[in-house]
Amino acid sequence: MRIEYNEELRMIKDEILMMSAMTEKMLADSVQALKSQDCELARSVIERDDLVDAKEIELQLIVSQVIATQGPVATDLRRLASTLKIITNLERIADMTVNISKRVMELSDTVYMKRLVDIPRTCDLAQTLLKLAIQAFVHEDISRLREVVDLEDEIDALNMQIHHDCLAYMIDNTKNIHQGSVFIFVGSYLERIGDHATNIFETVFYIITGDYIDFNDLDEETIVRIIETQKKIEAAGKED
Image 1 (cartoon, rainbow, N blue to C red):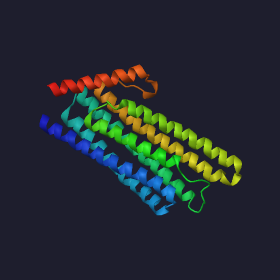
Image 2 (cartoon, rainbow, N blue to C red):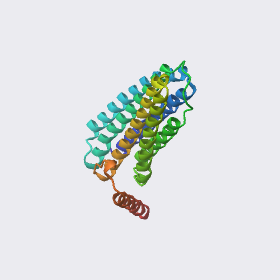
Image 3 (cartoon, one colour):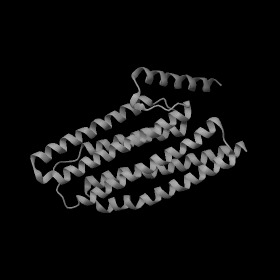
C-alpha cells in the first residue's frame, strides 16, 4: 500500500509540474503579446485557459481519491490537502494571464505612449518566483525563502513604478488615459501573480513545518532562523 501511495504522490507532483509549465508559458506569452501587440498570441493564451481549468479539476479529483482510498494522517494528510491550494493558485495565475491577454485586444490599434520596460521586467520576476515556488514544492525545500521574499518585494516596487509612470503620462496627455489605465491594470495582474506564487511557497512552508506564516510578517531574524533550520535538516538527512 505504501509503494502504491508513493507512486500516487509522484504522479500528483508530475501533474502539478505540467500544470505549472502550462501556466508559466501562458504568462510569458501574454506579456509577449502585449509587447508586440500580437492579438493571435493573446487569443491562444485565452484558449489555453480551458486546458488549465480542466487540469485543475482532474487534479482535484485525483487528490480527493487518494485521500479517500489511502486514509492519510498527520504529515501525509497535510501534504495532500495542501496540494489542492497549490493547484488553485496555479489556476488563478492562469486567470491573470487571460486578463492580460484581453487587455492586449483593447490596445491592438494603439501606438504605445512608451516602450514597455517595467512590465516585461515584472513578468520575468514573477516567472522566477513561480519557478522557485514549484521547485520548493517538488523538493520540499524552503531554503530559498529569502529569494522569494525579495522577489515579491521587487514585484511590488515595480508595480508601484508602473502605476506612477503611467499616471504621469496620463496627466501629461489625456490621450494616454486609456492605455495608461490598461498598463496599470497589467501591472496589478502581474503583482497578483507574484502573490499567488508566494502563496504556493507559503503552502510548501506549511507542508514542511506544520506552521502557516504570512511572509509579509517575516522579519530578518525569522528568515535567518528558518533558513538555518532547513540547512540543518538537510545536513541531518545526508548523514542518515
